[in-house]
Length: 378
Picture 1 (cartoon, rainbow, N blue to C red):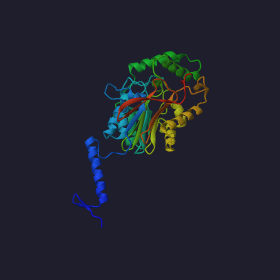
Picture 2 (spheres, helix red, strand yellow):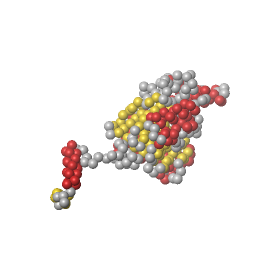
Picture 3 (cartoon, rainbow, N blue to C red):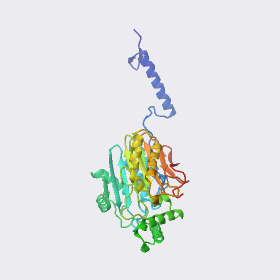
């Protein structure tokens, strides 16, 4: 019979004694180095967003992804953290693509859209065409929380927001947003149309000419911020909020508040969201497509490239093509999978094209990956 060693008042076999000693030595070594004795094997938390997620602070100390990451890692619900993050841009009048001071429609009225999805709860909420409320993402979250619906629109969404305690204002324009609207009106001269069919083309051309003249960024013309996150538990969530296409026809709703287009989250797979030409995205429900591609094993970058390839193939109208026969518009996707691997992919990129990321190393801007060379206007 093998002899047993005595340790801590218990009889141990030689193998148990050796194993216990090795574990104790490892724990002592970790304590001496200041590291935890037990290391988590879960995913590393990360928050990603469109480029404006690392640009605006609304007079505070944090950018969007920074605030969302801090709150998420402090234990707050993952979706609530993301919504608190994007609230920075919604309230900041310097970001002319979202919330207060966002680009108004053709009549000079700011109409806002937003969608949010909670991965672990498998729930979503959205509002579209809401007026007078600076933080539509927070209203969308209330739709998720207290109703059995997904999408509320127009006056109904505004009425719901008022009932939920949100302040409803008469006008969300700022002096800057109104000045840009007046410049757009001047350029299209809406009182002298010779052919009603030319109105949309004239409005679009006037907007792009303002981009070329440096009066506004292309990002501001198309609007939007998307923000997605993965916490230490491996849970995912996302939110997209926007003032929509600058000077749109009143009542126009793009991709941002539509599940599967402006945003899609599957807690077992990943999350994807978009900015850019919403109509092109809606036609292919690209955020849903991207998540499904990841479900089949695709890398986030490759999944987004597949979506952009489909958009390119489906763009056949001459008015939407440039001189090279390629899409004459921008469309970008921001993607993160269950393991925390992320990517930012765009139809075209420029020197300013970036997406925002925040992890344990703090906020940073990373370059977008282009699907096509050149630019939309080539």
